Length: 352
Image 1: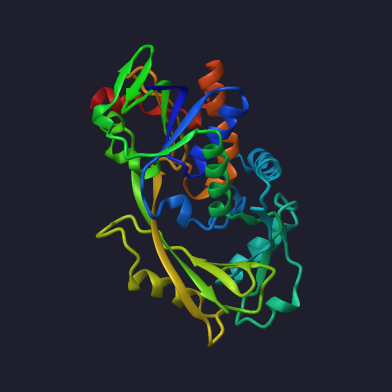
Image 2 (image 1 turned 90 degrees about the vertical axis):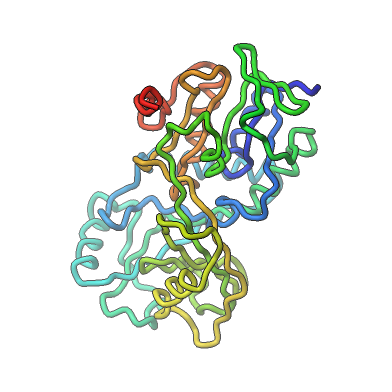
């Protein structure tokens, strides 16, 4: 029987960062990753953009969370010996004159540090009658590079195993948890939509949102910008781009399909060269919480069981701050901020 301070279920972005943080702070950790060819973190483009285009304001706590996140990822790069965090301006193409005017107003006002209306020659050739604006504080984290590097780091410390955990076979007690040949002081579920298969968390209002993403070769000549007109086109090196994404709340199946592919390509048509080639097409299910906020904290009745989930589409920005909050809860019993605490859903548990 192997014993650890913490057993962490899932090694997506949330599980990767939390595992490293706990080990850095002197705790023994085993990360249990279910065999799965595709997970949401693997599919995600990993973009960070602090601006919500629909309302043209900053996303939740972005003023605090974004600089913390960038520092955190750069620290991880140093520690893991990889390059995975890339700053890259985002060009937002407008659908009408109102959107263009609103952007210009905010670029000279409350979002001065994040927006620009500067013109760039490599963007001026696109068919864009209402023009574009630039988000200067955008970029992306290559999550596959990061997650693979963390996995290797964990394996080198004998802190990773591949196993499908049966939630009904876990024994919980006030002193810890036991499953298979593992005992731990506590278990944290960081398993994305996998949590929907855990009856212990059936009260949480988390659902699956399917997203489809394409890899395209020779998509466009604009290599220095993320292009966005409601869909995104992200250059990731050479002539390779990632494109997406769909947001599908009604799921007939979990696989990539032609409907999703054409939804992306049709929207991005103004940017695409005639000889572009789709080389890869994947789909993943994001864990989406009812109020679009993360879910952190201890189970309301089961001892030594916790959740770290629901980072959503802004996960790259949110993950480092949420990781530090989760570590503070586990190690120092300091509750996370109310908006992210699982306790906000206790009423659902009581009504179950």
